[in-house]
Length: 68
Image (cartoon, rainbow, N blue to C red; front, side, top):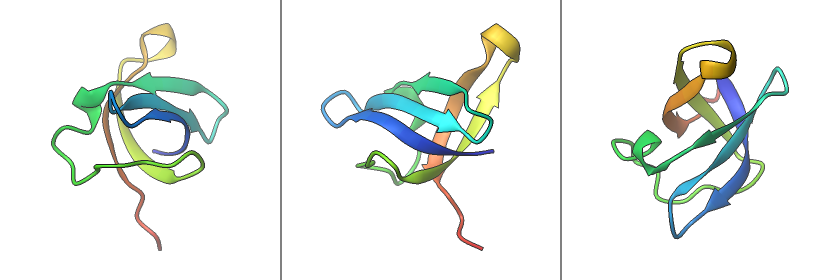
């Protein structure tokens, strides 16, 4: 799924994304730990992987969005 970065803290490497369905989901440093991401900007498009659903939906990975 793709989303847009809505908040990002470059000191803690955590933030939140806004999904295309309008849901804001927070993420921690663990979501970008095994990716090439070192910096994100508000408004940047990213690809996310999630687990769970409804109130238990959580981001497991944030990576750069693929441009088609």
